[in-house]
Image 1 (cartoon, rainbow, N blue to C red):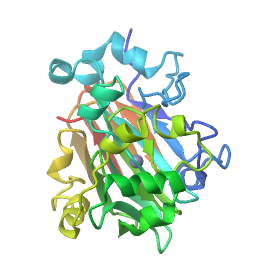
Image 2: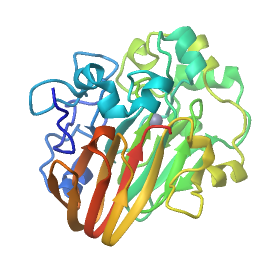
Image 3: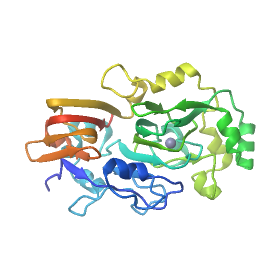
Length: 330
Ligand SMILES: [Zn+2]
C-alpha cells in the first residue's frame, strides 16, 4: 500500500483530560475548542494514552492508525537507517499543548525505570517550544534545594502543591522559548501557555499532585516508595536550567542532551528551500507557502501540521514561512 504522506493533519485532541486547556490550540489552528478539557493535540501520534483504548492514536484517511501503517511499511515511513537502529517505532511523539490552569506537579520516568517498573523500554524525556504565552507565564522545573524522600512522602500525604512549587525552580516562559525536560525532573507548566511538545513516545507521568485522581492513576499503579525512586531529588542548579533552555545558536532548538531522544529545528523560508527526507512533523507558526514533493503539493499557513515520511524524498518549501520541524533522533 502506498504511504499517504505528506499529509496535512487535523486536530486529534483526547477528550476529558484531567486538566483544563485547549483554547490556545483552537486559536493556533483556527478551529473550535472541543471542550474545556482538551489541552493536548496528539500530532502524527503512534502513542495512546496510558488508559489505552486507542485514544491519542492518529487515524489516517484510509481508516488505519498511523501506528499500523508504520508497522506495515517501516522503511517507507522511517528510512532504513532508522529501522536498523530503532526498529519500527517512530521514537517520536509530538503534541500541541495549551494550559488554562497550572498543570499537576509531575515527573516522567527514564528508560531504565520504565523498563524495570512499567514494562516499557522507553521512559519520557520531553522538550517544549513555546508558541504563545500570557505575560507572566512560567514553568516550575527541578528542585532549588535537595529534597529528601521523607519530604516527598509528606508532600504526597498532605497533597501540598504549594510546598512542592516552593521547592522548585521557577522558569519564565515566553513565545520563542525552549526548554528540555529530562526524565526524572519534577515539573509543572503554569496557566496560559501554548507550546509544541516533543516527547519519547509513551504516556508515562507520575503525578506527585493528584487532585481528584485516584492514587493508582496518579502513580501509574506504582507503590509510593517506588514512584519516589524515579524522581530526581537533587538540586537542579541555575546553570543547568540555563543549559536546558538553550539552543545552539543555530536552527537547532534544543541542547545536545536532547539528541538521543528527538530533535527540532526552527526553519524560516523566504523564497525556496529544500529539506532532507525524513519522518517528521512540520508545525507552521507563521506565514504562507507551499510544501511540494514528487507526489503532491500542500498549502501551508499558521496552525498547519504536516506528517512527512522518509519515502516522500526531499521536501521543497516555498513562500514566506516560519515553522518547526520535529524529527526522531538521527
Ligand atoms: Zn511533563
